[in-house]
Image (tube, rainbow, N blue to C red; front, side):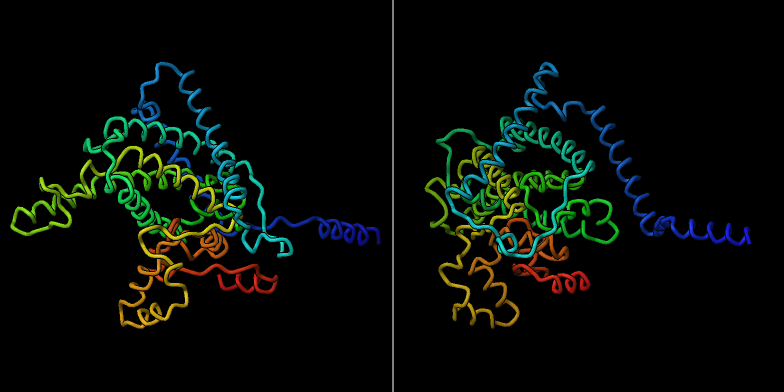
Length: 387
């Protein structure tokens, strides 16, 4: 009798103890690969910095104190700029919040920053500081082909407005496919998954910069690509036009009396154009991870305000076989539209809207999705099942 009671009590105690959930082999493999990737990345960075110390100090600052003063100034500048963007959007443009953030809408999922988030933000801050120093040093030296100019008198249509558009388009055309690549099942859990913890980005820079250092380096690489593309694109185009002129073709509308291609005179891009582009790039990255309903069309590409979304002309163009959709997107400006809602949809539905500034890549690849308002609990559950 006593033994039976003891056995029963032991069974009750065992039943009362919570069972530790078993970790699947897939999750164990992902964690191992993540630790291995982070370790290899850290070892490579330390090895590279040890052998190339000038990477963090391209200006050859004389001492560490001055270097850290510069670092603090850049961080304070980022904080000020983040708040300035919010002030401009709220006070001057009177932008409203996205429908999912309006009062009365279902509450959205908000994730607090964890220890890994702060580590990533800290590491990425050093990468940003290094990038700013290297970019300014690059501009000061005149760029890769000595085609960058600093003098105000050297402003041209080519090295300002046209170069500005080239930087935005070229950056997005490289960023979007690389972003798409990070969503491959084999890579997503290791690098990009952390950034997608926040389904409804709200904190601006903190949500934008809260990403794996590898992903952050990819973003820096895309910025460098945009600068180099704008530096060499128009001079190369001008060289082609000059060769055509030398071969007897007349380009009176495009060339000046001395034979120079008008759009490219003065070099590929002006240094001030690069600095302005960098400011816009930072502002739009912060806005993409904010709750504000900001959207516009890039200039000189086309405008939905001119044609309208329900224009009969665009409807007829869209019916043209094979090329109608392309022509409509280009003429209406749809392919070059910036909207914060597009990026919110990417955080809500991970396999859509890989572009950052325009939807050219997504409309081309069939991964574009229009903005959707707040979803009910049942709709949200159904959406998760489909994903």
